[in-house]
Length: 283
Image (tube, rainbow, N blue to C red; front, side):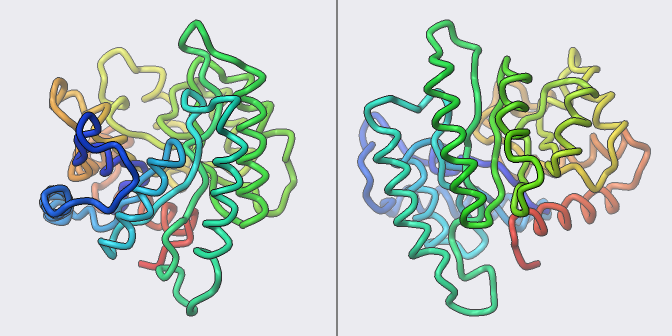
């Protein structure tokens, strides 16, 4: 299985002591190895680490160079976007992509970056700048289209705004991606599916108050679902209060299988295939 949304860089780095863009030290790499070994024991064989700004994206790319089963996305989270830096960051991403996506062989696994994001709209906090977020989101959508990469879309308290931004590109040949930590209703679920997106489900699917989300997970085709942890955030209900990790994809897959009255093996197989197709990974 694939953990399609992880922040392994955040899990292993003490940012209070070491926030600069340098290679991971030996202790951090050892911590990564332990996390990846635990994931492997639970049939989670591939990890996509998701960037939230230039620094974090570079760290995700570094992980992909250190570990063959890790891949990266590059992007600016809506809460990390600033008027002073976002254009510079986008320019840096463009230069990185030109180098990273230059064909090295027929294997997609020679490439580190498999998506653009985490990008989108977040209106949860009272001081959000909607116009800024929209500008940065559109720039990242265009970057993904240009380089034929999947989008990793963050939407919080912004169903309409997020959907409208993506719908502006309806019909574009390369438009695809995942709605990370999907949290809306059946109406928006179908809207995103109609645009060619899939929905990412993680630990929040198991939370007692999330019946609306479980309704969506039961309604949509299994082929339109991918699994994610958002580790170290949003652990499954049985592990609330603890740090999340990629190994817990197995817990989410089992919960989804029971919810849909399908076998664990089928859920694992189909979500894995969808994830690999979306991000261009080779099994």
